[in-house]
Length: 101
Image 1 (cartoon, one colour):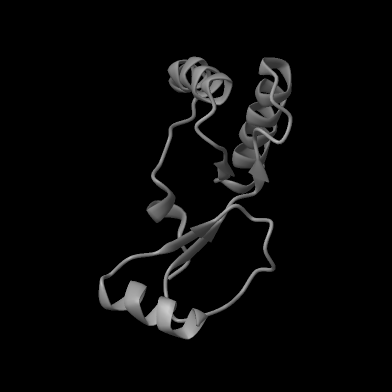
Image 2: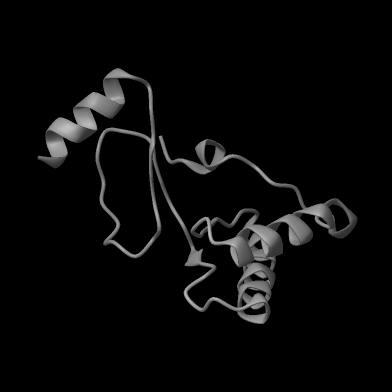
């Protein structure tokens, strides 16, 4: 089943992005896995802590990717966090920029 799915993605020039919880798999398509899920705990403080951890990872490795759901608290905390990134010398990038090809 995954081979058919991967072939369909590859034929369309798409990448597969997962939340990082699944085992890392190889394959012939571009792939990106999140370093952490930012909203396992649905509180502003917990999400902020996960976002700070992503910043630490990005500073150490040059990139970091998080995943989250479209919960109102997640959207709000990411919006506030993203507005201050440039002041901290960081920038958002699309997941496709982090996909291993």
